[in-house]
Length: 154
Image (cartoon, rainbow, N blue to C red; front, side, top):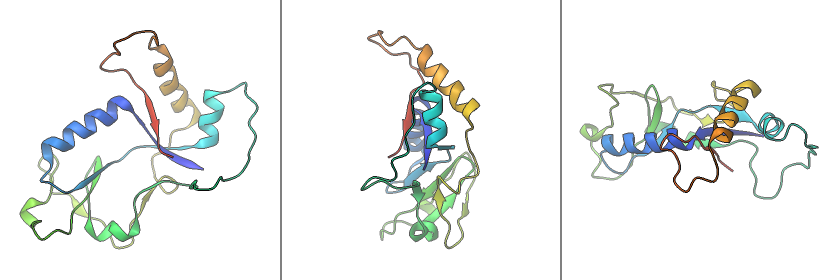
């Protein structure tokens, strides 16, 4: 199984950046790394026994953030994809831009999925993220504004 991985800090910054640049109705998808779930499990519980039980009802093997059906509506930017709405009010002039870039349309059949992603975190990268999370005191009532928290899809 594979999943996309993002820190809470990166997620919040991404949302705030998207709010500033949105025209209305778009779906913003960050370009983020993928992880192998077994690599993540080995890093988080290195001394734990890992038993492979197979896929459970409702689980997916891989996450898909831009399905093939939306490829024709998707614009690619350096750090994100934007799925444009089909609504009648949406005009070309409403197309999103990112720091002066007009982006480029994705090819028909494009799919952004955790298993075909080109950006992967290896165990050493995951270990660094986990160390950052563990370094934050959990007893604080007020978390640090840069506190990294891992978010994985499901």
